[in-house]
Amino acid sequence: MDDRRRTLRELEIRKNADIDSRNRLLESLGEALIQRTEEDEPFSGSSADGPARELAAEYRELQKEIADCTANIGKLEEDALKIRDLEKEIASREEEHSRLTKELIEVCTWLGKELLESELEDFEEFSAFYRDQEETLLLKISEHEQKIQELSDKEGGVFSWLGKNAQMAVSRALLSKNRSSLLKLYRSAGEQFLSIEPAQALVDTDQTKENNLESALKASQIKSNMSLLSKNLAALRDERRELGDAFGIEGNPARRIEGLEKRIAFVKEAFPGLYLRLGTLAATGSLASIMKEEDQAILEKAEIYKTEIAKGELAIEKIKASITIDNEKAEIEKMKRAIANQQQKIANANDAILELEKQIASTEQHIEELTTFLRERE
Image (tube, rainbow, N blue to C red):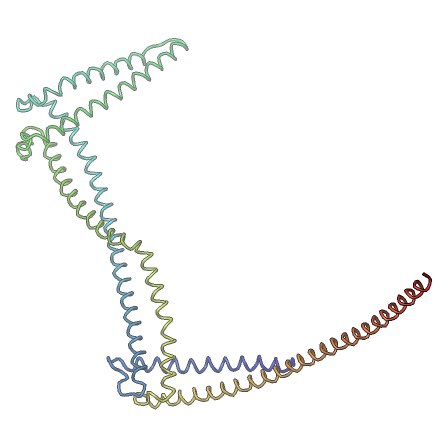
């Protein structure tokens, strides 16, 4: 029994190997046939026209799906690259806008200072509003500076020194605050000046130089550059948003590309089975009209494998039948032993019944004797 089972395993392994070898041959034949016939109706005229044409149509559908997925991947990669380029460009323009903003603040601050320092009558009315605030702040700054100097020159003991440092810290903080307020005042004046119509006349180069207000020209140029930059940024952000919205409908581009790549891999897995079906169809002789001489060697070898597979299957079935017969014979013997065992039990039971019946008869006779004895003694 063990030898037969070992032989059975060996035959199964050999049969599976032959099946794999035959399938590979027919698969390669099917692939050659499908690639050999690229026209719309490649199998017309063959006896297996319908099935072969269905396989060809299925092949074209698979190829089309792969092509569509590949095209979509290319478009997604192109759009993703465009988005990265846009984001870099936006970041660069935002950095430039931030730099210009800081530069404009500095120029407006300097322009405001020039305006308040100018003695020209053209600016007198404009400057009057800010000059009082400037004088107040300059006076406070001067007072704090003088206070700090006085404290610095002051001498004394330890307690005096501690008090002096505390006062100097307060004065320095107030000095810093007022200096900051003065710069904000200059900046406010410069920005306000640039926003009013009369200032536009000063943008002319000769006039700004004549009035010592070149800062006005520079500030105007910066504002013009910032305006153009803002428009450019808005256009870039709109383009980025449009691409982002397109991605937003179906998800992250990287995940979509990954999904399409997985789909392509899945579709490609269908080709071997399709090639095998076509090769198997060709092995029946149904596609003789499109077969070439080199195909015949493949078919002959496939037929040899088919014969070997059939022989192997027959040998396997014989061994399985032999093993089944022995198993069933063993089962019969087992059932016969069970029957004999049950029959022995029945015989033993019958003997026990006979013995019990004898005991019953003996007991009944004894009862009858005792009953007679009692009746006679009444």
